[in-house]
Image 1 (cartoon, rainbow, N blue to C red):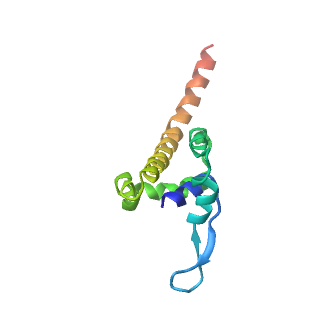
Image 2 (image 1 turned 90 degrees about the horizontal axis):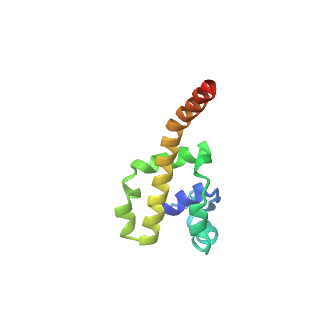
Image 3 (image 1 turned 135 degrees about the vertical axis):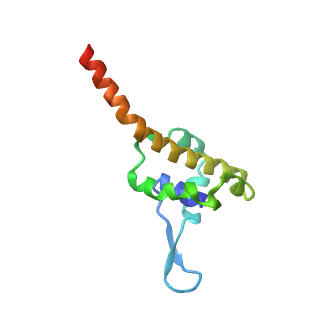
Length: 119
């Protein structure tokens, strides 16, 4: 789940692989994330410089359900990987930030307009 979320955030396309049941194909995020993200020595820089004020709505539609997914809890992820736990926390923080920014943004704009009209 962490690799999938990271791919969504950085718009990394999944690889289509054969489904485990042999019927059709499914999205595999591990290989693309391993090459494009986990193996990137600048991943931490990319995370800190991520444009959190302009997360595409399509990305948020994918990320928001992870917030309530019991398998996407940091304590659960930490059992598999401490690094993945940190990324899980980052993704969850981006979801929270986006929700708050959408609430506060219009209020900031209203304040700016009110201050402008008083000037």
